[in-house]
Image 1 (cartoon, rainbow, N blue to C red):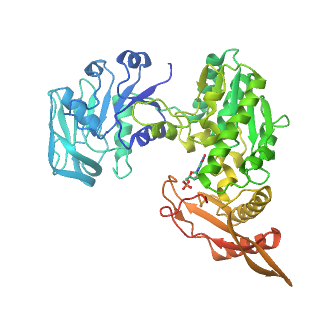
Image 2: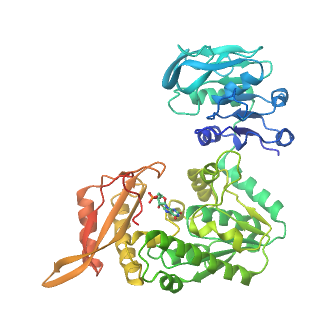
Image 3: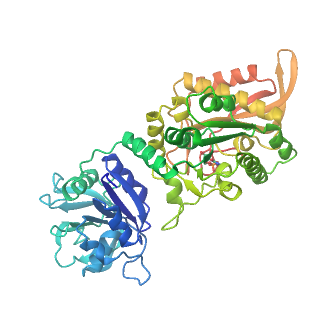
Length: 513
Ligand code: XMP
C-alpha cells in the first residue's frame, strides 16, 4: 500500500468510530481492525502508526483481549487510549490496578507540554475520563507525561520506542485539546504528512476496484438511497458496463422517486452502467392485501424483495461480484472482531443467499455517512440524491397504519410531497434530520364546502437527531404547519385532517408503524 495509513486496533470500546473519524478529519487515511489481527498482516500493511482503542475489559483478567507483544518492537509508533493504555503498560511490565475512585466525565489534567503528545497543549487542561482501572505505575522505560488528582499516570511515553499512552479519551470533544494531541501523535510521532483527502478516496477506490474486478461481472441492488447510489457510481466509474444495477420499485417509494432514480441511473442518465428497473408495485400490493400487523408487513416486503431480485439475477446469469452499500457504522454495529453483518434492511439483507456470486465488494465500508455524502458530491451525483434523508427499506408501508393499499400509498405520497416542498421553501429541510407525512388509520367527519366528508387523518412527523437512536420532535413554526395542513386538505382528496406529532423517541419511534 503506497498511501500513509494509521491502523486502529479495536478492543471493543464505545468511541472507536470517533477515533477513526478524528484521524480522518486530520487528513490521514485509517482503517479499524480487530485487536487480534495477525502480526504478519500488520507488517504487510506497514502502517505509519497504530492506535489501540479503549474497551470494556479488565486487562488483568485472563480472557481480556490482548495484542502480540512483538507489536511494540516493530518501530511503529503506538498510541494506547484508555484500555489500550493500560494494556500497553501491563504487557510491558507496568502496574495496573483498581483506582481508589472511579473517574468519569470532565476531569482536570496536568500535562507536560514539553513532550511529543502534548506540544502546544495547555499545561492545565480538561480531558474526558471513563475508567475504574488505572495505571498505578508506568512500565519501565516510560516517563509520566500527565496526571490528574486521582490518576498518577494519566499519560506516559517511551520516546525511544515511540510508545505513547493516555488514560483519557482525546477523541471525545469534551477533551478540550484532544484534537491537538491526536495531531501531535500523527505528525510528530508518526511523521504523517496529513494530506489524505476524499478525492484521494475516490481515486484510490476506483483504481483498487478495477484491479480487483478485472473483467468480472458485477451486480448491485440499487435502492436510490445515498449509500447504494454512491457505491453504484463508484463501481460504474471503475468498471462501466461490467456493472448491472437492479432497482426494484416496490410501489412504496416517495412520490416520483422511482422516476427520479431512473432519470439519474437509467439509459437517459449520467452513468455508464446497465440499469434494470423492475416495476413490481402490484406484486407487493397483492402480497400486502389485508395485512395490518407492522412486523408482518416488513417480513412480506423483505421476502418479496428477495424473490424479485433473485428472478432478475437469474436472468443476468452468473456474476462475479455483488456490491453492497455497507457503511462504517454498519460495520461497527457488528461488534468486536467479527466481520461485517450485511445490513439488516430488507432491501439488502437477504441478497447474498439468493444470488450466485464469488465475492462481495463493499467500497464504502470505511466511511461515515457524511463522508459517503462527500464522496457522492465528488463523484458528481446530484445534490437531491446525496442529501436525501433516511428512508426505510420497507418504505411507505411502515408509514401507513393498518392495511396498505395502492390508494393509501397515493394519499401518503401526495401529503408527504407537499410537506417536503413546504419544508424546503421555509428552509427547514436541512435543520430537521428526518421529516415525512404518515397516514393514520383514523377516519373522521369533516366538512368541505357544503359537503360532509369522512376521510383519513394524516400526521406530520419531523425530528431532530444525531444518531436516530433517540430524537426530539422538531419545533416547526405554526405558520409552516398551518400552510402544510391547508394545502394537504385542499389538494389531497381523501385526507380531511392534519396533525403534528410532538412525541420524542423514546417513548415513540421515528417511523409510524
Ligand atoms: P425508528 O422508527 O426505529 O427509526 O425510530 C430509526 C431510523 O431507522 C430508519 N428505519 C429503517 N431504515 N430499513 C432502513 O433502511 C428499515 O427497515 C428501517 N426501519 C426504520 C428510520 O427511517 C429512522 O431513520
